[in-house]
Length: 207
Image 1 (cartoon, rainbow, N blue to C red):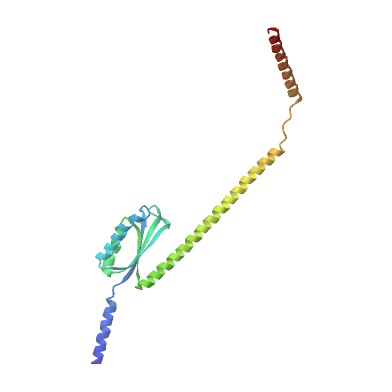
Image 2: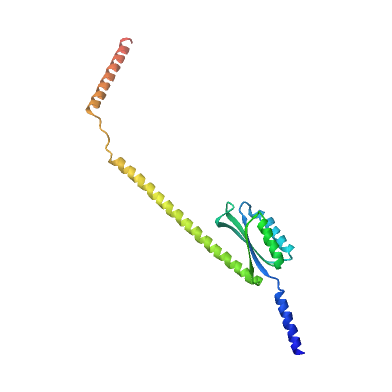
C-alpha cells in the first residue's frame, strides 16, 4: 500500500513538472520613424497576440532608443522593448509568425528562459539602467573633452595667425618717396601757389 501511494505521488509530480507552461523572453525592435508616444499601440498589439494564445506577461521593460550596430531596412536607430511571459508551445509558433509579418517591428528575438521572481527581474533592470547611465556619462564626458581640445587648438591657431600677421606688418618697411616724386610734389605745390596768387591779384584789381 505505501509503495502504491509513493508511486502515485511520483507520477503526479512528474505530470506537474511536464505540464508547466514554458517561460519566454521577447526582445523586439521598432524603427525610429515613430515617436515614443506612438510606440504604445505597437506594444498593445504584441500584448494582444500573447493574450490570444492565453499567455501571461510577467515582465515589461522599455529599454529606450539606441543606435543599431548596422542599418536595418535603412534605419540606424530603433526602440527596444523587452517582455517576459508564460505561453504554451503551440501558441508560440503563431506569435513568432505574427511578429515576422508585422511591418512595424524591424526585428524580434524570442528565447526560452527560466522564470524569475519579479523582484529579481526588477533588480536586474535597475542594474542595467545604472550601467547605461554610467556609459552615457562617460560618452558625454569624452565628447565634452574633445570639444574643449578642439576649441583650445582653434584658439591657438587663431592667435598664431594674428601674431604672424602683426610681425610681418612690423618687419615690412614703409615705402619712401623717390626723388622724382618729391620734385613733382614740389612743382605741383609751386603751381598751386602761383594760381592762387593770380586769383587773389585779380580780386584786388577788380575790387
